[in-house]
Image (cartoon, rainbow, N blue to C red; front, side, top):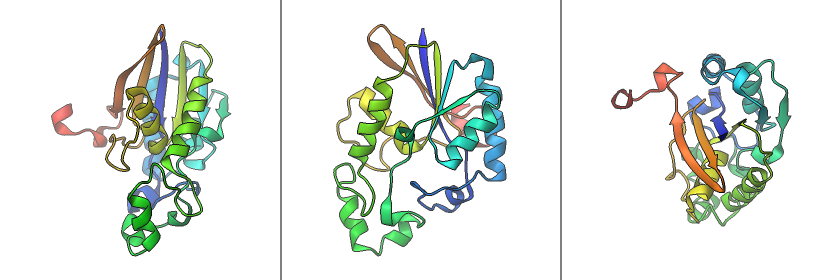
Length: 203
């Protein structure tokens, strides 16, 4: 049985303050590096046949920390949404901008000023997905927007709304399994390796 494990990068200081990172680079925080180490123990490096990562520092550092002995194949199609002019600010800080309100009305179809739309993000993520080699276990360390667009594609959701889709915590594991031509979602947002991220009613 083939598996694709999609991992959201571990946490950064900007994540903790709510800033939109997009294509800007931020390293992992101390907590993020702890999450990445626990992630590696959970997934098991020996189980990984091919390891992909977004080129952004927070994803690449997560992959390198969790799977230090695996070669990393970097693919730009796994990058987070380019938020353009909104990057480096929190949603609350962006709220005073007329462009922000315009974009929020349809972020799937509308490009963030100087950036891209979620439709464009999904197109590149799906292109990557459809080119995957047929190996037993592929792991990709990427971003919440990228994973959510892939999952929405698998589920047949044509126009997912921003921030009203799927909860994906930092260093979370989501997994697809392949049975012939069928692609099944086996798990989403699994963070059992990071105890502080578990909701009491789920554990």
